[in-house]
Length: 326
Image (cartoon, rainbow, N blue to C red; front, side, top):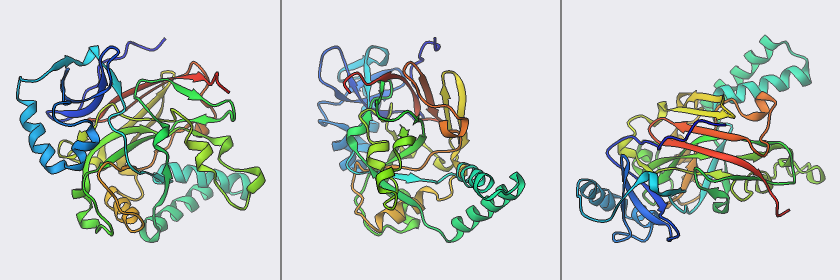
């Protein structure tokens, strides 16, 4: 059995989230340590606050120091995903060691290279990609989002269900063709996402020429545990150096700094906004480091537990269950 779940903590004086008390409807909340202020008298949801982020941040700072309002103990609440996003933009193949491992394995198995040759070739490729390449971004479905402590339902179709823990950012200002130098001013805050993927549903054998089937592989219900909090960007001094850690049944599988990103957050925002207008509430996942199930040769099964955390953003615990509706 996993250890008892501690209350999640966050960087800075406060964070935001969505909570439930008893049988009541979910409500937006301001989190200060172990206490949560109901923000229903301020906004109908966290997304509304993000849409007026600069003004909201000023008001939230004042509310965090005001004893008035309705306050709850965090331990008495159910923690939902912090907000309902607009677009979900997901960055693939964005951690150097992760991609080097994948490319080197292919060089060894397919081309017969030695381990040393394969890794040297892969590292050279990543150096060139960082200098002259572009990010790889695709869309996810908001319907895949679930709470940070909810069960993850494993579809009956497919067997290689895999974890991919990621730093995610929430857009706080509308923008198109955002310059890299200005990109960080568009970030409202950060949260945690676990971008679960069914590996053996990723490629369609009947449509090999078309390529990946992201919809089927990544967008099953509950396949994107998100939260627990939205931590304002002002309280995360260096998102390019936070620790991403995931344990599978107590075993550390991912443990990496965001320093290992090939394309940093400003470059991802610049690239994404060249194609689509970014709007407040959009969620941008920044990629997952080395150590997923495919690397370890083990995949998620009913009863498995994933414990995940990112420095300053809190923690998640999700238990996997079988899909009994199939």
